[in-house]
Length: 243
Image 1 (spheres, rainbow, N blue to C red):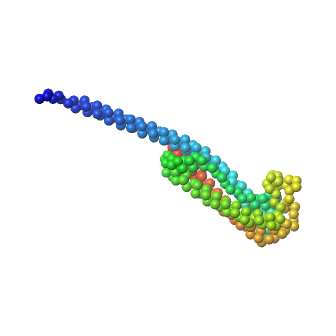
Image 2 (cartoon, rainbow, N blue to C red):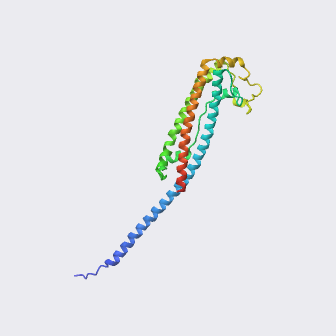
Image 3 (cartoon, rainbow, N blue to C red):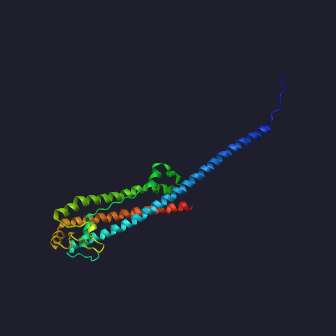
């Protein structure tokens, strides 16, 4: 019969606890490190998003101001068609006619936002409200683009064909100086009272002006919606950065 030795349970227990503790500590360190890296990535991403959307905001505000100017210009043409008097001495009739025939489209590149969504890394943004608004921002932009595309269709399907059919002289923007003066050799509607009288007494041309004016007015509301959405995203980004 072999002799049995007393098993050192106390020592074994202490060693087991030490091993478990070291494993748990290693897991905790790994989790802490991963969390720290994720937060650093979030802050870097937020900084990049802030720069991107600040740029969007500046572009949108400038484009909205441009649309307001276009709206006013076409409003002058509408007033001329209704009253027989061109009402502005600040913008020439030739320049107003250019705004009538020049559609405008927006091209806002969102590389940081798009990459974040397409890579599935948007979850790194801890603010759920910000994640939602970033995901939905493109749908608001699409509303603006759709509205602008309607304007493009109107110009190419109705405005330009009418002008070419009626022989309306409309020099390009390169032919018009900031003071409204035409370059040498350019044809001017302002200097062609016969054509002016014919088209501004034409109900079809007035209908074109009213339709273009209405589209531009609606497009400005789409700009307002996108600007509000952009400003909200910027505010949430800044709050997350400072949190």
